[in-house]
Length: 177
Image (cartoon, rainbow, N blue to C red):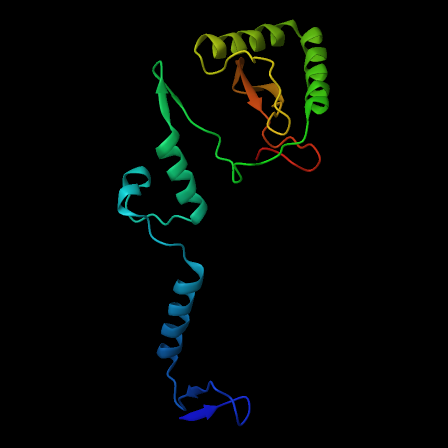
């Protein structure tokens, strides 16, 4: 064994063996990797949510806790909170960008009456089924985000529209993603 110190007064020394075996090195590296780069195992009370043996990050735990504590059943539908990383987030006012996207959508409605009918029916169904509700119009500075959306048709299902809500739309380099 050799003792290696930084200088004569070093308080910490490292011991090295002359003949480390390859298997020993592999075991040490595996132990370091498991300690530094793996997430903690799922807690017992959360296993029913994700299944046995799953690994969960700190953000996953925070999300699971938020959902567990704040998910409610309202008229047969689950209502869940937005999983924001920061509860005190201040959102920029993206109304201008959202209106610009809406104007583009309106132009397409004028050009394609079938698209307009399908899109309108989709939105009506969302409201009727209480998946969405009309806005109260109340705007809270820093807490209001206008969610742009657009419609697409799948090539193999041209009669069925899918409305895409664009959570990655940005304003001042921010999005709700």
